[in-house]
Length: 225
Image (tube, rainbow, N blue to C red):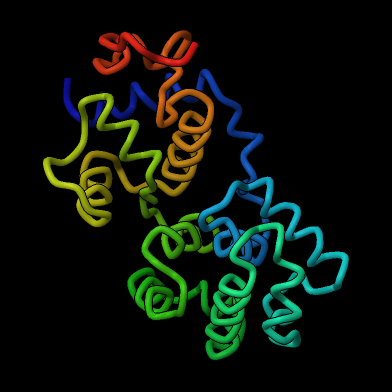
């Protein structure tokens, strides 16, 4: 079976097991909400991001423009539920400054894919995963976002490139799958949902939707029930 067919089969199994409609970023989610969330979700759970965003809303500061009107310390106080508050306040303000320099977020996101990615990666606190989350979900570019859940899952499935590295993994997926924003969004979301529920650091293999095709799961002797 070709790599493309294997990946398509995995996506179908994940799609049947999880509810993509419950994912926090949908096609009608505002780009600004996605951008703010992409910064705040670094090194924390989405539930904590929601709490921080609610505090921003209550303070009338849930926008990139509003973030520039607050001091780093004041913004950090609002972002505390998301963890690393001062660090994330600085990163959020850095993204807001980038958007302002481009004439607004809409103009920033309308830049060509490569130029947008280059500008994001040159911004304080934005690495490849955060940049690609913004490219994929906010700007609508077909880039395959890679995260720890993806690498862990596909290594257990016996799939993936010979070497590790963000760019290596991304190229492997994008060479195997046709460039389609909707598919890439769905695939990434379902991988994360699966990684949180079943394919954890200590996997919960019994009942896993991928157990039939997972050599690691089929050979596991000591897994969580």
